[in-house]
Length: 168
Image: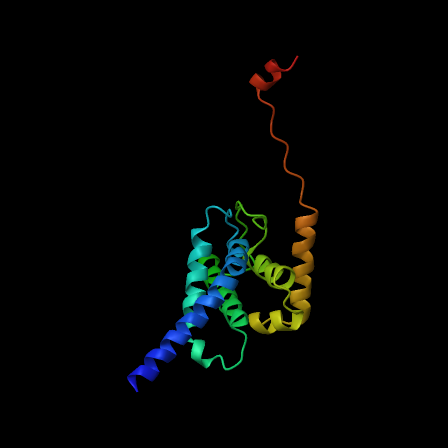
């Protein structure tokens, strides 16, 4: 009995290690986009990924044919949304300048953009995951895409006296 249990645990560990070897890079990139951190300095994204993978491993035996990548991505998204809610109050409001390419966007905009465009999740699935109407997901995705494609002009920096004196 113990040998059977031990072999089942060893098989489970091998399967999970194989899954992590194939999916961790893409999930880390998604987490880095979500947290809007620089790719080389992303402690929040790595923590988000570790928690997501731990949750996926804990529910590994209950997947029953379900895609483990979908489960890990779903947990990554809900964990990020919950953390953004606790950090900023409402996920759609806060706009902090970050180093990542999605830094100018609010957390909710980043989440929807990553799920829809980077991960390729359908609007209906994204809406169900976040508990939003499909039209709202579409509007947020369109607004976030427009904000990235057409950023507002940066305010002109005032010219200092030293800069004026340096120009001929």
